[in-house]
Image 1 (cartoon, chains in turn cyan, orange):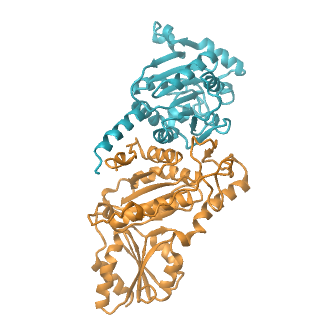
Image 2: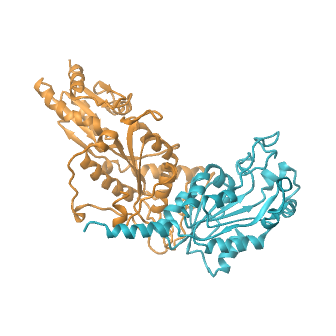
Image 3: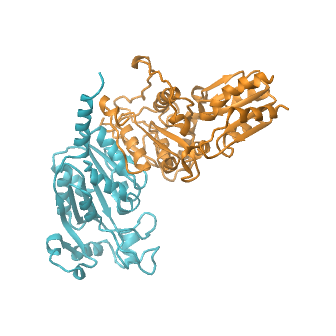
Length: 249
Length: 336
């Protein structure tokens, strides 16, 4: 949240009147609502992105920002993220990835690393985790970056780019859940988790020269893509303009 | 709609699933737009959670459900009327819906207009409960000039207002981007949108207000077509495609010397309890034809309270209607 607010301020926004926030269910869904003095739609688990689409099409002048957890965006709501990227819907999605269903008691999530013990995988996670940032790139996002909350400066910079990039931007902010994740994995406190984020992160450029074995369990940080093409709103308004020419008098 | 809407300043988007469809409708509604979606049984099932969200957040929107023969995929292209109770109770938690039931092409138009007006007036999702036959019919349709169509718009807040929810008289609704800093949530909230996720009195007050604004205004919302309902041997309560047989049954029964009265529901919910009871008090029997295994029947029985025996006439699947002859024989049998 602080990275986002810093980014908005550095971009010259004195308040959040040009923003609308949509969020689903989960700890990170509570970032905009009730903590921000702004319009916010706190919707169903996983369904924040379609609601954001409805807002954006009717009000393309507003910055629509979605905050959600990995359960919200990569679990129940994954298809909406993929389709929003495909459409190049001009909204910014911040996925706060704590690698677990934290609010509900620490159940295994699609982002939980293989082998990790959680309340529903007490013998270790027997599934592989999803690389959501890479998926967003493949699906057609205009901007994708992944940093951890231990990378405050980089995260703020990425937020600024995400706000200003036309099209679908996706930021994965790897963040600590000391109560439901850290405790079970064996971290003493938040500070230790943040240190682990730092030592366990590999910048994207460096990672490209490393083997799969070397990258096992690492968090690969950096900018995955930055490109622009016409957005959903650009396209839908230009189609409407053409349609109006064909309208019966 | 995909063809016409962009020509007149609207938009149509084919979403990835039904939750997304109604989600986008709700997002659009919070910008001040009038928005709707249409589906059939399976999609209506998927939408239930989002209907609950629209109800809880008092978001005006219209949902068309064209009923098919369920459950599940069932006979996906064949008519059914099995969503009557789903439309009433489909969402989890306490709920009071507005559900309209057209029985002609003209009414599909008229009741869609009314659905939007009710949605805006009461700030609530309104369901247009059609069926495969009514929605695929070809009939003549009169679209009145725009200035002859009654259009109701939601009440807007004034600068400085902060109560946007749960007022018994229906709260004014701001749009996003107007500077009201409106906090919309599907969690329990107070008049300002502030969340109260554990407080009993707030939750009870919220649920009572949301259901109350529909149920207490039932007189204004309820709409039905009555024929001879105050003076008949047998009364028929029907809706949608099944009601189309009733007109002919009335004629055929008259030839047999039986006077048939009819209440044809244009709103299934709220249900016109009082009118149905009064018809039952004057009749020897009430007949309820429907393309399901008894849904409306129980509501009629509940309203009639033993004033007359209630007879159910059912048929499901195959795209088959209850024919006037079939309905006539049940009507005649009920007074023997």
